[in-house]
Amino acid sequence: MDVLPLVALVAVSAAIAGAARRTPVPAPLLLVAAGLVASYVPGVPDYTLDPHIVLPLLLPPLLHTAALDSSYLDLRANARPVALLSVGYVLFATVAVGYLAHLLVPDLPLTAALVLGAVIAPPDAVAATAIARRLGLPGRITTILQGESLVNDATAITAYKVALAAAVGEGISWAGGIAEFAVAAVGGIAVGLVLMVPIHWLRRGLREPLLQNTLSLLIPFAAYAAAEHFHASGVLAVVVVALYLGHRAWQVDFATRLQEEAVWKVVAFVLESSVFALIGLQLPHVVRELGAYGVGEAAWYAVGVFLAVVVVRFVWVFPATYLPRALSRRIREREAGVTWTSPVIVGWAGMRGVVSLAIAFSIPEISGGEPFPARNLVLFLTFTTVIGTLVVQGLTLPPLIRALKLPGRDARAETLAEAQAQSEASRAAEQRLEELLADERNALPGPLADRLRTVLERRRNAVWERLGGVNRLTGESADDTYRRLAREMIAAEREVFVRLRDARRIDDEMMRTLLRRLDLEEAAAYREGGSAG
Image 1: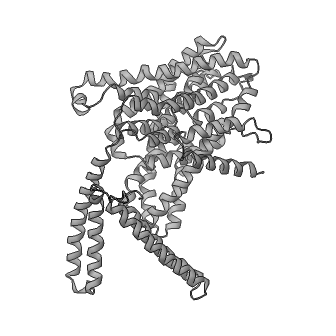
Image 2: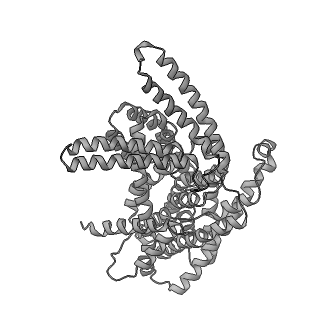
Image 3: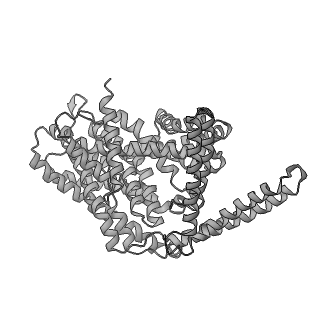
């Protein structure tokens, strides 16, 4: 097995994603564009998406990390709009886009068109999360988009299986399709519910952070495989387990949390970068497989399908936003602040991604002894829809948000809430400290006891200082200056340790121990005030 192409893909994708952070263009768009260009560069290997790799090996960790970063409480509070998008919209788009494609493309059977509709129905979890995070959308819209993208793959995969069975003549009925969907959904949730508590118990029982993080890396694959073994939705199983673990993450020791956060950031960065580059790299394969359809003819069909996907989403989003409010006074009172701009943003933020391509590539070439009708055209239309939504909607979403003057997160209000929460926690810690120091068994010399009080006071004041003024000479807040000086002091200590190691006055093992202690102190100084100065 030649691993060089894989190493090259990861390395180049990571470099492009890193460079994108210094540009106003979201990384997914640059990666897709780079993949499109690279696909026709002589010597670049043929990277063909294998659904047997993408679905069981790439999708679970991407869903897992997205769910860990989501809020179970926020998702529960927005369960209605999330369900309407992740289930209702996907089923509606499958039928509506499929029927429109059937009318648009001559000789495309309705069953094959419904397969296409199911394939391109779900917005992508990676694209939605990456774009929303980059743009700083209001919290509720971000929650709805993330929640939709976590669950909609399960709906789409099940709808695809039902449509495919109909297309290849297996005689599945509407009742059978609904039953299969229900079994997959309920089964996936059930598997997640069964696994989440024992997995969390095992995580808490392990005392070695390396073992805990090894388990963390295995969890999404295990949950997905277990659900698929019972013909249930592996997607829902992964999401349920990850939401529970993320909600209970505070019960795991700090060393595991620090390592786990770093590990999953790396995993998500590498996979997201590679996935978007892979999308662009599919162009030669898709065009080569068009067969009887000319590129020009297929391009017109692609434009029509892209427009259908965009229009159908708005056709669903606006009624799904306003009909529940019209029918329920309770919803109107609870969600009084919703304006027309929110459904516009949600409607336009429907980028498709690698899951759609992976499902499309899984369509069998031969079924029942007959070629699958228009399989190559379905692949081409899926590819162009994914590229079209990523490029057109991804590029225009930031200016659209600016034009609509959509309010972003209120940084000052969030800082005030953080400061109030820290103040309450500090008071509780101070009371507990005095109780402990009153016990003779906990007797400490005065300087050490004062140091504990100073650290506590510093943590309490740090957030409040971010609300205050800035140094007129440097533009820094007092908290920024504190963290900068702390780092300078730590850097001076670090240089001494290295010099002592080089002079052979301490060995490498001792130096690593001392440096780790400084790293933890620097991390604490970094986190006390929030973001880096």
